[in-house]
Structure formats: C-alpha cells, structure tokens
Length: 151
Figure: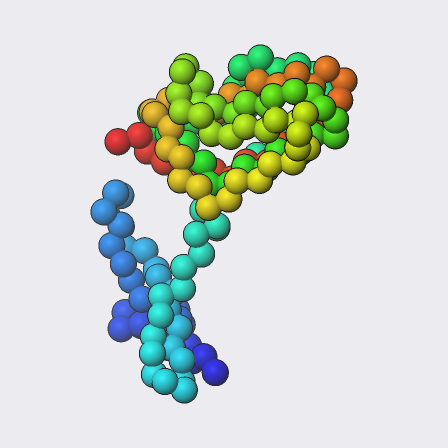
C-alpha cells in the first residue's frame, strides 16, 4: 500500500519542492511512501516532457526538415519509429546541415525500424531532416523528442 503525505510547505498532498537551476523557481516533486517497508521514492515520469511528431509521407523527401527547434534551442531525440508499406529503398533521419545520423530503415530487407531509449542530442538550431524515396508508397514516421535551451 502507498501513502500520500503533505510537504513541509503545507502544500498539496504527495509533493515536496525542488529548485530549478535553469529558471530559478521552486518546482513540485512527487514522492510516494511504501507503508510496508517505510521506504520513500521520487516519482519520475520522463515521458511527460516529450513531444511526439507523427506524419505519413507518400512522396520523395530529399532532406526535408520535419522538426525544427525554436531559435537558440536544440532537439534531443528519445524514440524513433519508421514503418514503410513497400520497398521504398533507404530512409534516412538525420540532424540537418551535416549533423549526426539518427536512424536508418533499409526497406528492401525490413519494412519497420524501432529505436527506443535514445539520447541523441542535436546542435543548437539544428532540425531533424528526412530523406526517403516513397514515390507513391507510404512511409509513417513517429519521433519522440525534447526541445531544450541550447546552452
């Protein structure tokens, strides 16, 4: 059984306060306590800060930027899912302007590629670009990412 408790600040149940060093504000942190062994743990939900990009492509894409950060920010890729309904050749997902490779799908051999639990960090102002020869066939792209300040 899990017990909720109040913070010393007299605030909402199940919260303690941590300090955000970026913006200098106090942020609530959730904790739970196991009543059987009196251990306390911080509740962490890493996916709640992620954004998700989804799109279906039916045409050739030659270095098309599909995710662009706001000026001065960078993108961190967390998960990529690429699904093709036919042999459309090689699908490339990279950071633009000669940036890091993110993912590849070689659809002559496989029609699906899934990359999870990634931490691929792009440079400041670098978007995510797609290169694919869909040419009438379909390619479905899902990308989970985080946009952060480019310090």
